[in-house]
Length: 163
Image (cartoon, rainbow, N blue to C red; front, top):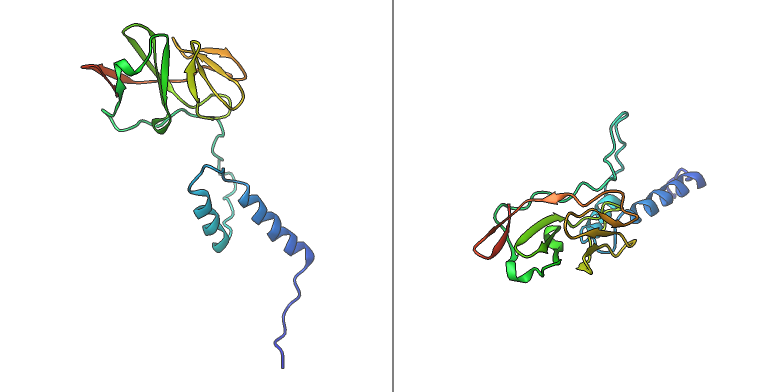
């Protein structure tokens, strides 16, 4: 004799399918953890958020503080009037005038993309065209709503270090 099963409603099947599709769309193609997180989500039961639990802000917050003393570059690697993006450290270093070095978060204040390069006197974001001035990271062209936050560096013996 065959075991009796309870029929699954169409609504229940669609709800599970919609939840799985939503989870699949949460990661980005360059996020190495997304496939692992997706696999874990598929095998773990869903967890409901507690009521009145604040959700994390989607506003970019700048980079977290890297290990103190990390050497980013030699001073000779940073062109006068330009700069260099260190994507792995989420920082951009500029030299607006000879001997003056500044550092800013490399995370665009528009939607959190990492800026791509420094050219023509601006720090440039590839996602939506935001541009920031090398001297102070103020917005030169939108849609960025505010300047890039400053980062701390030290310059010693021809080397630029994260502070």
